[in-house]
Length: 323
Image (cartoon, rainbow, N blue to C red; front, side, top):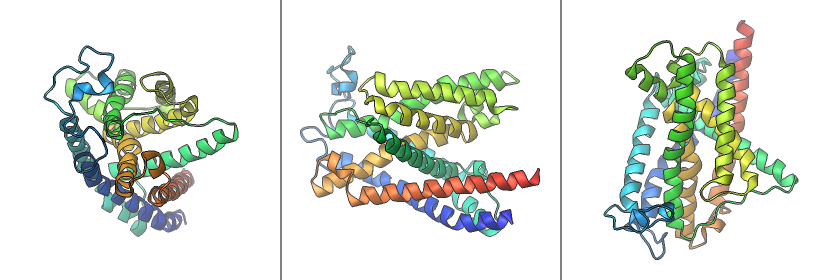
């Protein structure tokens, strides 16, 4: 009975995750286009020196001569995400499409076997949670106001860079290393590296301590968004903390590839489509987020989030019936 339920839910679940995957894929060339072929930066372009960015304002490097441009760094970031994306399609145990096909054909749902299933699923859940939190907060008068950037190209560059820096800091350093200390039974550099890449390799006998650590790091992640750098409004704290919990759980269950690409999706993926709409329709970036294309993508992600939650509940019920 439970297998049939999983198969029934599996049809919309796999269809929606496949659409999300396709949207991910298309965002790669879109990002290249808006950085190198559009007028996104106005008076600056991809040849703008890296050290002239506001990112370096409070450092000695600010506006110092540099042969490195934002285009150079963007290509490195783009290539990194592309490589991790390809890795995520193929592993760790099953390819993305094969994992989805087993849900429909046999009613078997083994999410950790595929990075990309976890990435598309948990990103959709993250969007669903963020929308729900935003609706509740608006009822209490708490709005989410993003930081103001003077240049759209600089903003797109910063949101593309942030996932790498923040995932290394919050997931690898603040979560991965403590998890290794807590659950590792042996000292080995190779094993240490494997566990940082995928903490699932650790012998986590009880998830209680790990969950507490994930929540603590998520709170720090939420605070970082409202008190450091170019801060958001205070309304960002709760959704950022919720995102931190999802990213932390994805890191624990799937590894760094999953948390990095989920974070990439919240930043690069969303802004790639928004900047593309802005440039092709000649409208401000703020207005682009209200464009029917972006609204349609949001609806698809919400539907995928709902399907993912239902799928996880059905899977949990199936496991419970076997106990």
